[in-house]
Length: 172
Ligand SMILES: [Fe+2]
Ligand SMILES: [Fe+2]
Image (cartoon, rainbow, N blue to C red; front, side):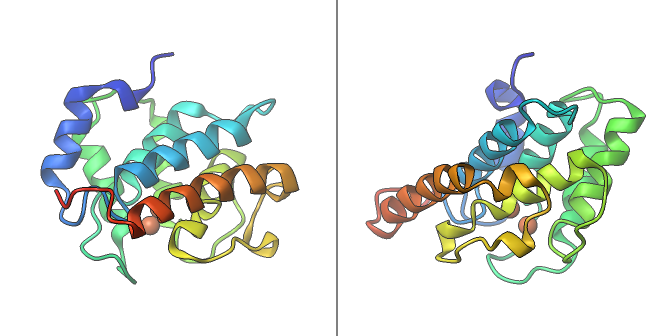
């Protein structure tokens, strides 16, 4: 299946409505790494990759700041709901999973369907971009706790944060 990340109309629309730094800590590069983490975590499971991609794109899409931003997951899902059928297709089950995953991605909930747990882990495995080492006790799945997986994800997050700190991204 073609990745939603290569859908220019969708990515452009997300960028147009994004309120904070597109190349910052919660922007497109983070979303891409969440997708990649999620893809790696989903290997060999029956997790729904379409939901994971939608989560990667929408979970932080309606943030209003780079810090504690209550309700941003729910707002992200509301945007996805508005755009379903226009920019992407999803079943009722997939939208239900997306709503659950978006809503609870930053409130400490760890119980839920595997697809949602993979979404949360994929997000948390990118924490080193802001200098926070992801701890196993905050990861839901055995796949995410795997030392090799954590090393891979940490490496990507760290590499990005070094580029960012060096000012290699323009402030669009
Ligand atoms: Fe978030
Ligand atoms: Fe995030």
